[in-house]
Image (cartoon, rainbow, N blue to C red):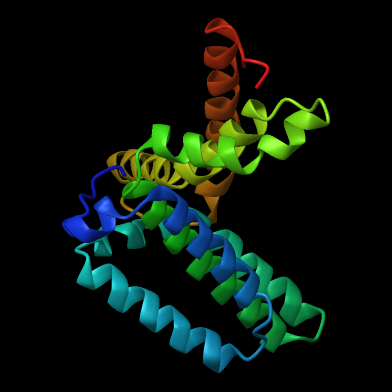
Length: 197
């Protein structure tokens, strides 16, 4: 995780499979919750967890998607359902923080090993599973990278303008994220792509 060190040894020592399973179950459970008050309480619980493991720096992860969450909330409001918009934004915020916490406390090789085992049945059907495993792992890894990208864009804005950075950063942020994804794809291709597992 960029700029954040997880101090809790017990979290770093926890098996990757346990953390990924907990993340998956939490994701499913969150989509069964519709009450914004309950989701707000869960977000407070996640913040308490981050504080307990010394990872409050992960809050920076929400900055890159803050404007997008605000736009999603506004869109729901314009459609007449503010409460649904609030619930959606709270869910996304919780999931981004938890996914980044898992990514920050788990080695890439451990996550790939777990996903390879979980996806093994697909290989019996002739489906290569390594691309799927890498895609899932990189999705988890990209959250902190996007947070750092947003921070760099904000610093660049402040170096050039006395005004506070606003929605104008969204376009360069999206373009730079797509550029990062393109570079990641080229790097994978240069290393021979994926094996056929």
